[in-house]
Length: 77
Image (cartoon, rainbow, N blue to C red; front, side, top):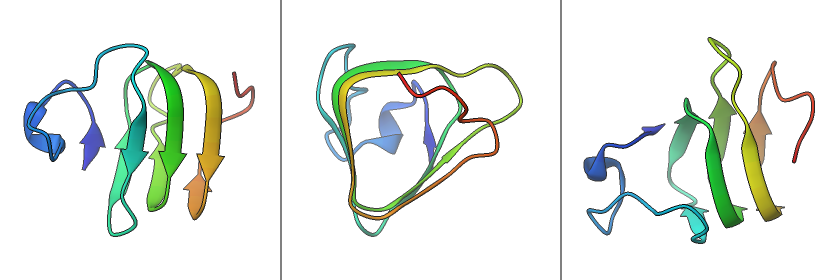
């Protein structure tokens, strides 16, 4: 699954709007391939950050309860 503008990626059927809370469920593996702005990013599953471009993750809080993998995540916001 990719964190994109595709509503099919989300169990609600809607792409989270900027500033919303986002949860990556425990049984999901997600690649963030676009810049995102969220209030809280809660990672229970696995998150990979795409490295084909500069990607910015802006969040008030990032809570990781599982794995996060990135060769390009150098400066968390």
